[in-house]
Length: 402
Image 1 (cartoon, helix red, strand yellow):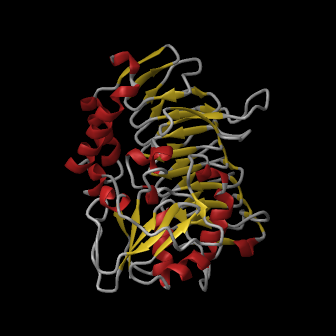
Image 2 (image 1 turned 180 degrees about the vertical axis):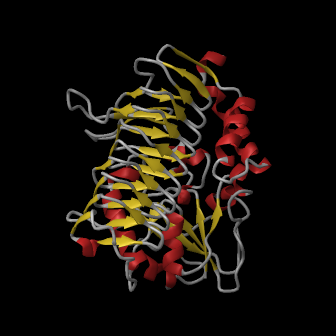
Image 3 (image 1 turned 120 degrees about the vertical axis):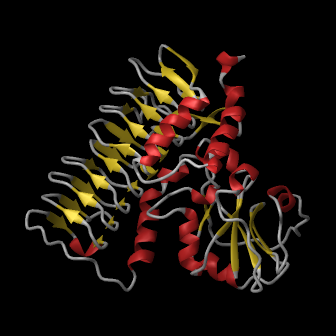
């Protein structure tokens, strides 16, 4: 059975700027990405049907004699849904309140998203159970604690944690703490009373760090000295974090290594928050927070009192940068200077509260190349073509270029 995760045409625009650089199913919520969750359930390699300019980077749909099943990439799987999909017969479909959940194409295959979206599916097969969709940007962090619990159960089932050998590390509810091989702990406090704590392979928690669960630290990532992780946090692989973080997610290869507060936020890959960068996550009048929405091409009411920063890949901030409540920054922005910049910063912007100009593509390539080289990665032609596509697509939002 071959699982192909597709970008829903109505959901994907709501998840920009994070989906500028990845399929929807590559979003991380909980310990794992959505695609990794599906991979664990089906014990099989997952492929994607995504935007044309992203398809070269991500696994192309592959045919299988056991059948190709197209699954909405915005869905976080659970046992009941997986059982239903396993029983799905060729030609049959599952819907949830008008949204396509899954389709068994038999040995058939769609060559593009347009072909899938234009397919005349029978309006049948309504699924009666609840499904957790990531439909909006804030859904990524809003249910992160529960997603950590779900993924923790999947990843640790039948396994034994590596022991905590440091005599100066204090733990609460240690049976709810799991260490992968190579984890380093030094004089830290781990409190798993309210949820599990998962420390990935070769992760490091330095002296004086305080961690409350639910919490996940990815492979090779570091919590710096004195870091305060307040709960419902996911730190993806190869990140460095410090200061105070609450109910936030860093996808991977991103740094928030210094003091400063990050709350109710999502940070993409290859980002760096300069020393004492701070995010506001609540208005002084306790009003609902509005967030820029690419699908609407305007601001959308989240209905939340807590919502901080949504940051696309390859973004950077200078020291002492301040972000107002409900700020969205696009891909490859460089923000610095005093004052609060605007709450929507288009991709490839350079500047801050005093004004913005265009961050030229060749300079972005230089910066990205150096950042990736430091982690043993290469900025290849595929990555460059993706950034080039976004640069031109986002020109419409850089009003100063008109």
